[in-house]
Image (cartoon, rainbow, N blue to C red; front, side, top):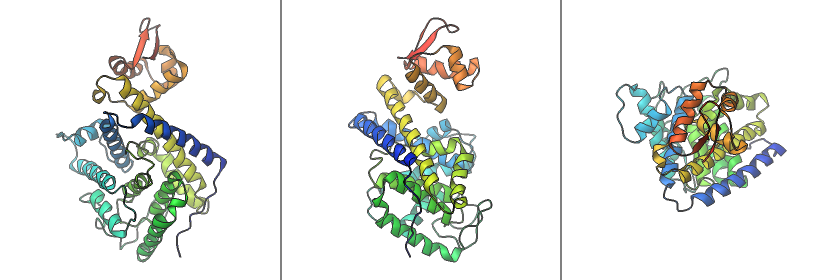
Length: 334
């Protein structure tokens, strides 16, 4: 039997798909043949790597991951944490190189897992389906003797039936079903998220490899894990999981558009590193045209010092302008 995902195309799902399509069209139109495309690609690679490894407990910060990606040595980082980051960066490059591959096989899954999990597994072997029973919280994944057959069914669906749906939907289905099978003894979370990204690449959704949806998952890990576990509580109905994944992708595209605007405005874009709170602030300024220091603090729930820590880099980069004094002035986008 082949795998048959269960879900309905809800009104909420349709709304997210329509918004995503419009944002994607705007982004791709803006990024065609631009000299700062490599900057967007590196940014997505770093953010995906930081978030996907952080979800699994990696302690390195976004800035530390960025330095590792650039080839710098960090004297104090835990060796395993650095290895996890280097592995994930290599895994992303693997799926980038194979973005147009027509058929994905067990061997491809083994290779990706071996790249991601080499040297950082607590049990089992990298690049081989598990031969032991594993447990994920209160969930007991399928017995090891069933794994190969279940993965064969999933690969058949991925290669043959997934294209019947939007890549936003098929990537979410692939992501969940892989985690449900949990085919490896360790490293399933990172591998499942990488596969979901691979589907966006294969289907031509993220043509330039500049989206970092894992960042949204990583910002609220409890919500991410709850969305996954709720599928089983709802009798394997994937509707709400797909809605959740689509919303995360919607947020991702919003952020990519903000980064594009930042690159357009900045004379030296590679020196500007936007944190999620700064991106949120830029979106607020775009919506409200201008804000007082008090409005910024209240909207973001931060202190005076926290507000200045966010604002000062934006002012120096020329992304934000201030009129009046620091205490009583207004801030607006440049």
